[in-house]
Length: 325
Ligand code: PEP
Ligand code: MN
Image (tube, rainbow, N blue to C red; front, top):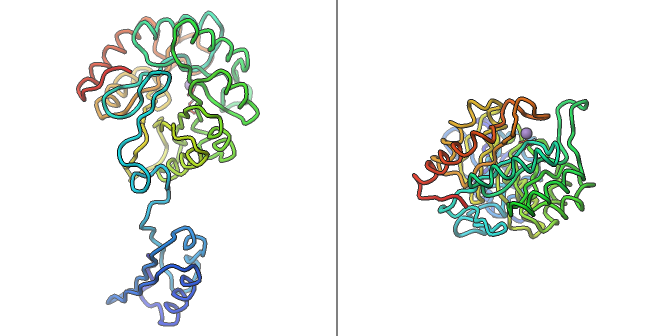
């Protein structure tokens, strides 16, 4: 819908109409008392590429159809997307997926200890960073390939599927060999080349919302992955720095209370809220000695507290008829 300025001339309206018609859309001019609106019915892509906002007499262009296509419930999905990740159901409304583990794989002992603890408390999957995006280039960036081997050992022992971040296209092969779920970090949500590589890996992708990304942008990022023929995408809300007005999703949505809060005292109430509001799961950071953690210690739950935490989250998920996956 193209909304003209109040005093747009007939010539300006005609020029917009002519421009729209070059794309083959059906054009309907709707003169109002003050302003004229022009409806363009057809391919929204072609219209967006015209750059009509710059034409004389045009006030604004208001998209009616949603910009994301494959992630949209309007076009391709009848019901919610339900994934099966190594036997864990994600989405669908009757299960809750609790992904827990350290921010970063620091050592074999640390990772195995946390993996055993979260497994014993009923977690669905193990998280742990091998390649870490750090704000400072001088901070610990993870153990890389060695961490992937450690995660593989933790999976072997506990049976928990492993979630780990793909930071760079160069690591795709190594991550592909070890991860059960490929995490795309908040900072890389709009790294489109990386999204395409992730989409081609043949593994479920956990896509985190960018630090100041709108839901439209998140869902268009999901489209990049879906477009590669990968249907297994989980959206992750990890806290943002902007305002947002939209509320529609079809893909499973899990919440990251650790990075959203950055403070373990808030992780528990946020987790209860996430479970009670109907999220499909949580991805939460757990450490055997949070004060000594090499990354994100202040937000990590301790393994000794994790059983109580897991029980509490499960009780809130149960309010909505969900049990741990
Ligand atoms: C993480 O999961 O450890 C992480 C770095 O998350 P985010 O990309 O959401 O900041
Ligand atoms: Mn972290």
